[in-house]
Amino acid sequence: MRKRMIAGNWKMNETYSEGVVLARGLAKELEAGTGDVDVVVCPPAVDLKGVSEVIEQESAPFALGAQNVYWEEKGAFTGETAPGMLTNIGATHCIIGHSERRGYFGETDEDINKKAKALMAHGIVPISCCGESLEVREAGMHVEFVVEQIKADTAGLTIDDPSRYVIAYEPIWAIGTGKTATADDAQEVCGAIRKTLAEVFGQETADGIRILYGGSAKPENVAGFLEKEDVDGALVGGASLKADSFAAMVKVVM
Ligand code: 13P
Image 1 (cartoon, rainbow, N blue to C red):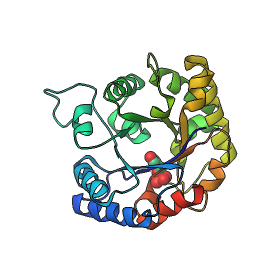
Image 2: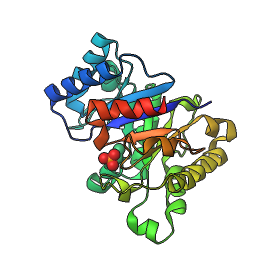
Image 3: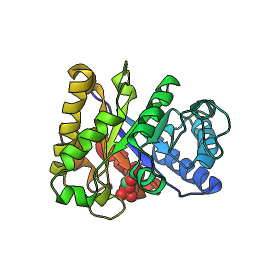
Image 4: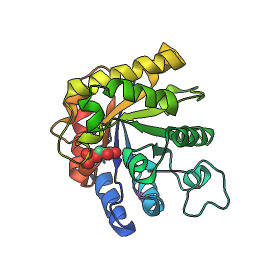
């Protein structure tokens, strides 16, 4: 019922020119199509237009996502990007609430909630991230912690089409460390997320929302995560920076 999704978060990697080359490489790798998998590529803001052009020129089978957005429509917000600016250049998805933005840039659940509302008002699919630190995990509080994030991040949202709101569970201790959560660890939290979504939005909506796992996901381990009932895809950092490894992840779960 839920279509699988593999999303690549390039983070602050790839200049404009490098991003165009990477996107072209990915278009070539995936030229035979992506079956029943939604693929999304999320480059840095300055690369978005270039990657958008590649998608158009090559009829590439992947969607374009941003890594951040501001919730206001326009105005004196130096350095920020409005939702309408993203739709104008062809972005259809946007990551919000990544732990790096929460940690380095002080983003709060309230900010993330406002960003989700602004994106949805513009028809952009949020990929809303949550996840606990090592400290929280070691204290055995990870489920409670993530459930609270989900409640705060989704407060007051109207989700008419659950296929257009995506959550990514990314345990912070597994990001860029090579240390992955086990598939059972991911299922434990993703299952709790879905239960929380059912309490907030009703079971039918909860059953339609995709929950991705992120944190050192790679071609060798991605299938194991997706075997789990409540894991519907992956949000990939490092392994999305090489066209062949990212395409391999798509092919493994197609
Ligand atoms: P890595 O796949 O490099 O661990 O990054 C995960 C991530 O943060 C994706 O958003």
